[in-house]
Length: 350
Ligand code: ASP
Image (cartoon, protein in one colour):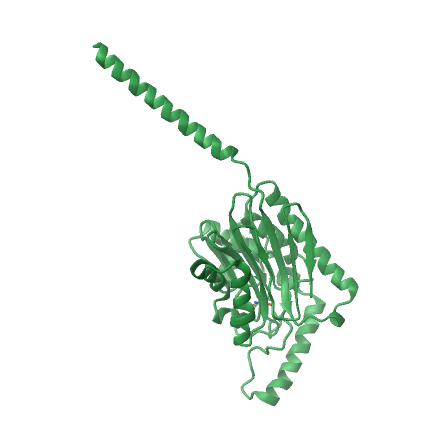
């Protein structure tokens, strides 16, 4: 080999190894990248006309304790560098397993005396989402929503098909009797009777949903993880005394649930039809993206103005990409709470 060729070959070999080494170091750097500090998580347990005299101090404490447990479950995942989507699922599962909330175990009854649940989850990094609607035998609908997002090519599936999918994915399936609670049954009887009287008085066709019904108890969670990714999830039994396989806003991406790393993660609660009409969750994100509003301005605009303008009621929890949390509602109360990066828990009802 000529000396010139030897020189050229050695330069090429050197260049190759150098580039491989810098590839290695950049991979390593990414792995070693310090986890961010501004992570946080917020939850809600439904908004509605919750009044002090309807909840004893002991009941209030029970709600607060359960919400604190849910917050800590999500925090444990975030604190150790886990993903926001997993934290959202973990927090919501705790509330779904409790009879206190209108989701999973504590779901309200339909007019026909059944429990039909809806849930959705969304990943702000990829804009991937999954949702289930009208499911009756999936113990944790939020986990089914996550499986839809991760393991199917669909976003929203419903009824028996969704139950079949959940079973195929190895999720826990229970008998419909698992969701029976005395409290919710009494609530149905009460609401069904008063709806009959109301419809006789005001509406000869009979309304599908009486707006005065208590519907609080839906659960939701929004989180920002230590990698800077947002996620949102919502799970509900819907509205007591609902008919005709009615589906609310919770499983509808953009209405009751939305997440986008560019802006925020949102979970709504309240009278679902109104949240669908104003596409509440996506509107909050849009106001931030296209109008440059802060997270608090955008959420207040949607709940205090847009929702109130159409006489809708409810609230929302929103977290932005910097971990700033806002929780506006236009009802008398909203079960809600958040946990900061130091693990400090705050829970409120009124
Ligand atoms: N938004 C839920 C629904 O309409 C109910 C609620 O959040 O209270 O199904």
